[in-house]
Length: 138
Image (cartoon, rainbow, N blue to C red; front, side):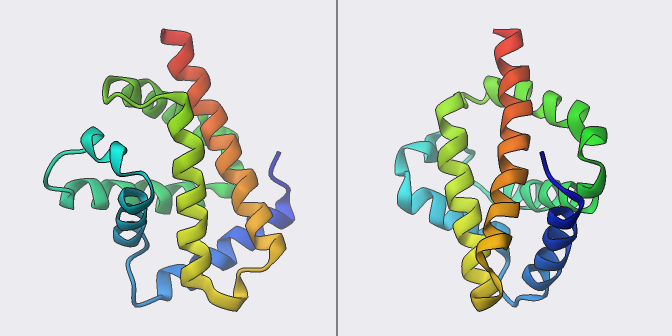
């Protein structure tokens, strides 16, 4: 469970990431396909809309990080929708690793061990909710 201190840390961390000249969403997909090329087939040829949707989703998630349970319904629906795209439970760990590494890269030295743990805790909760919803429909 994400603590209030971790939620505060995520908010601060994300503000630095958003201030970066690099777009975290574009960089995330670039890294995802480099590390796990087989997942490219799960996405449309033109990634532009997907990059925008992913960015908006992460932005909203962090904006509501102090009340994560209020986002569970949206995350559950996303989990069910991802099944239709061919996403499997095993994909979540790969995505989480790449996402957190991307955020760490953009943050530089400001991405401390505590920051990493906060992001990992948030991602674990998001993945848990999405996977549970996906499996409940299967």
